Image (cartoon, rainbow, N blue to C red):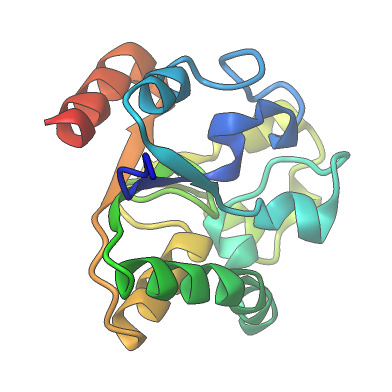
Length: 184
């Protein structure tokens, strides 16, 4: 048996950028560093894309404030439950889940930073021009809603798995840092 029992968990869009909001992908298809993970013997678990599964492909960009509600959080828990079960099964069978790679800037999957906008609370009709809306969005040093729920569930089930944030605004350096951590 040639299993090396090494696993990395990736946010959905790292392997499939087609799930992103139209116009927001900075790469084609899958990120190159996924090939390096495979070449180094890592199995990959791809998390679901909560935005795609809740709002479809023709959705627009959102902010954390729009997702930070009980309905979305409960949906995230439903989506994550089978993954938590998998993580537990692997860890209790001697496998190493090296890390979970999140996407910084995402309102759902950001780890170190997420996008935020106060105008999306209840005054969106005052900003009919989408360019104005984009100018009112900022990155804040918080987790996205999906990753917050994931962290809570990992803690609840005593699963100690490192989470790393991939910064797409500095993709080359961020990818190198993550690979250095994983392949050390």
